[in-house]
Amino acid sequence: MQIPSEAGLVLRIDAKFCQVEIHGERRRLPLAGKLFEQKTHEKRPLAVGDHVLLDQTGQAIDQVLPRSSQLHRRAATEGEHQAQVLAANITHVLAVASVKSPPFQPELVDGLLAAAARERIAATLVLTKVDLAKKAAARWVSVYEHANVRVLETCTVAGKETKESLAELAELLHQNRSVLIGLSGAGKSTLLNAVVPGVTLRTGRLNHIQQGRHTTTHTELLVLPGGGHVLDTPGVRNFHLFCTGSQELQFLFPEIAARLPQCAFRSCLHNGEQDCAAQTALAAGEIPKTRYQSYLRMLADALTAENPALRSGRAPPRGGGRRRPR
Ligand SMILES: Nc1nc2c(ncn2[C@@H]2O[C@H](COP(=O)(O)OP(=O)(O)O)[C@@H](O)[C@H]2O)c(=O)[nH]1
Ligand SMILES: [Mg+2]
Ligand SMILES: [Zn+2]
Image 1 (tube, rainbow, N blue to C red):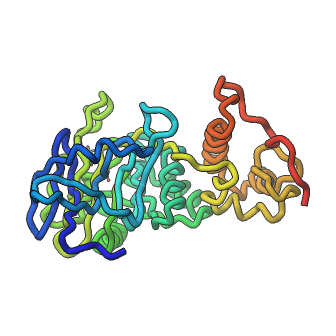
Image 2 (tube, protein in one colour):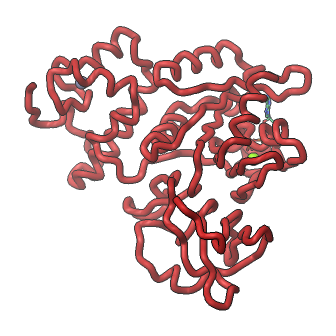
Image 3 (cartoon, helix red, strand yellow):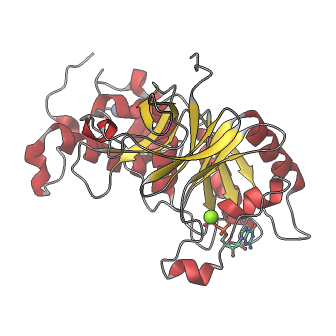
């Protein structure tokens, strides 16, 4: 996509203003009222990472240019049909998850990876604090190997640094416009401080975070010396996909979709159907349990969105109703 030279890059969004990099300068600019009037399915008119144009006076943001990619989730507080765009125009998603303190949350990680896959954005799982639980780290590495996900095992504690994986992370950061996303306290800001010279983000003591205090309070796109941009985000607790169809979902879980050709039904959702190869693989330990559970939870979500009658809290139909055999 060609970005016009007069376009600015949104680095940070505050209550009434945005910080924009434009013509090599950092400016604080308001949004023109018309941006709020356009009805879209998005919660806010623009996101960090957006390319924008100014109005004729050059004093307000007037237009948001089409995005090459976006990482979005279903807005937590709004209706089901609103999306929250966490980052626009990014080329790499870094799902950051500690192996311990706070505990690894497979459903959150799987939601992030699925959202990236859906937008065809490359993704890496960054396991942090491997010094605290080496065995658990190895287990998660093997789970995500099945999913063809690149995993970096990291530790930033002085004297125990995982030099090789931190160097790989630095390389990734310099080559991409990336977003670091995961639970609060996972170690995102600490990672950036460790691998990007000159960056000193505030990091938090975990006991503060457990009381619900985030140390990274806003999302800001950092321009890295040596190339690349990175977005350090405050923590996300959950990540629900926005408007993903039940048939489309399995293709975001490569190790599950790979079984479809062997299932009895061409449209198998691997949700209790007869002769389902994915369920056989699960029973044989060839598909990790946590990945399958994440898939089933997201499937229940997708089926509910497609069939509002299910919204009363009833379980999704097992076997997915009528199926056409092969
Ligand atoms: N043991 C251990 N603690 C870490 C490591 N990385 C970060 N921490 C701690 O985890 C806490 C949260 O880190 P922070 O970077 O603020 O997390 P964020 O909310 O994801 O940005 C801090 O107290 C860090 O010192 C690590 O590799 N090992
Ligand atoms: Mg932080
Ligand atoms: Zn199946």
